[in-house]
Image (cartoon, rainbow, N blue to C red; front, side, top):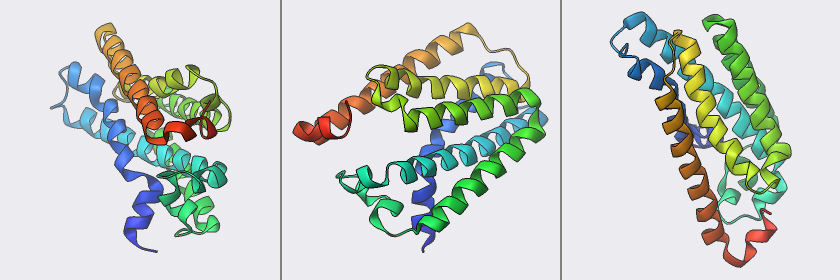
Amino acid sequence: MSDVVLLKALRAQQWIKNLFIFGPLLFSQNLSNGPLLYLAFRAFVAFCMISSAQYIFNDIRDLEEDRSHPIKSLRPLASGRMKMGLAVALLIGMGLGGFLIAATISLPFLLIAIGYFVLQALYTVWLKHIVILDVFIIAAGFLIRVIAGGLAVDVEISSWLLICTILLSLFLALGKRRYELTLLQENASNHRP
C-alpha cells in the first residue's frame, strides 16, 4: 500500500479543519509566544490524529453504503485498496496516539477531545441521518476545535470568535449538504434523508 493511499485513508486533506485550533491563540495576540504556539501545535496534531481515527471509523461503519456512492467508492477501504485489519489498526493507533498527546496538554483539553470523538462517533452511527441536526453537528465540530484551542493554550475565547466560528461553520456545513444533493441528484434520497 502506498503512502498516498494511507494519507487518503487518514483524510489528511481534512486536517486543515483543525487549523481552527489556532484561532484563540491568534486572536489573543499570542501567536508569537513560542511556548503557547508549541502547545497549540501539539493540540493540532492531537486533533488531526483523533479526527483521522474518526474518519476511519466512519469508513468502516459505512463501508457498504460507500461502495455504491460515486465519490466515496474511491476511498481506500471502499475501493479495496486498504484491508480491514489495517484500517482497524489505524483507527486504534491514531485514536490512542491523539488521546495520549491530548493528555499531555491538560485535563480540560483531553476531555474536550474525548467529547469531540464521542460526538463524531454519534454522528457516524446515528445523528447524520437526522435532517438539519446533522448540519448543526458538523458546525459543532468546528466550534469544539476553537474551544479546544483556547483550552490548550489557556486563553479566553472572545464571543466574537465564537459567533464567527458558528456562522462560518454553518455556512460550510450547509454548502456541503447542497453539494451532495447536486452531485447525487435523483439518487440523493438513497444516501441521506
